[in-house]
Length: 344
Image (cartoon, rainbow, N blue to C red; front, side, top):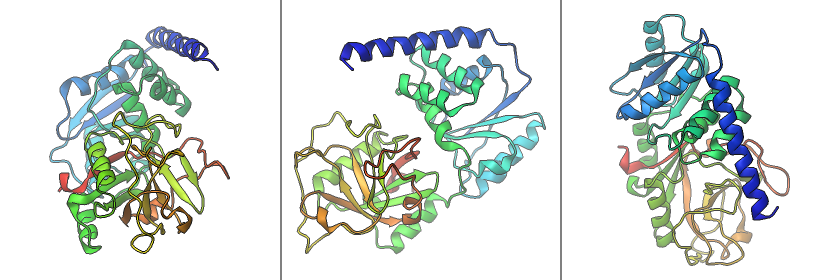
């Protein structure tokens, strides 16, 4: 397709979004009730927009604030208590800036791990998300992600796509203890929150200082939050770090020169984290991959930037892609990524 063709498609989708807005606003009020549970530090305007979106699609709304925010298995009991206090008419639960819970045990349709850190930038994003909620279909939520990736609509849709049936996880403090036991340094540990559990990566600034700094910077900027594992090959590796999900995107920071390791010093083994690149050795930017198995054929060709210290069992559960290409349909996501030292 030519650039003009893509532009035409984009404009067509925007028109569909506008049509969705008219349809949603014409829908009769629903008897369903949604409860919005707020964690620490939720911006009032953001939570208000989420509530308004739910009301637009026909939900009655209730809200509750839980402070301090519990962690691990205590999240479930706190949410259950909030639902019980609200009465038995709640049909859906949305949590903002809250920990992961085993939402399937709560008895309602639940959308978790919504980071309330952005706002709607246009009415179109709100309309698409409202229609997606009304339809209750993942494909409709994906429209909000595709059309409005930088808005609250896109952020909320990403969380909803990845937040169903989330599992109870250990607390960040427990992860920190495990990292310390494995000889890791919290200042150099990058933690990926997946629906299968936490994955703690030790960044090897001794091997690749420039690449380790890049991953740290992007993590602290929130760049990786919600990004998919777009290429996953069984027996080889899981690749992520591209906000477009195509394998052709990156950050707006300059590409990095190679920092290849001598194989006698560091080799691509199971759990090794490498930087993805194009054919140009000096083209690594934001994408990285985690090895399922050893791959010494990559030694001296790709930069080793880290290794998995905790959570390889979660890595093993990442959804695989098509044989050969590794392209993943409805891929798993990095729900949130943070530096361990920033959370303890």
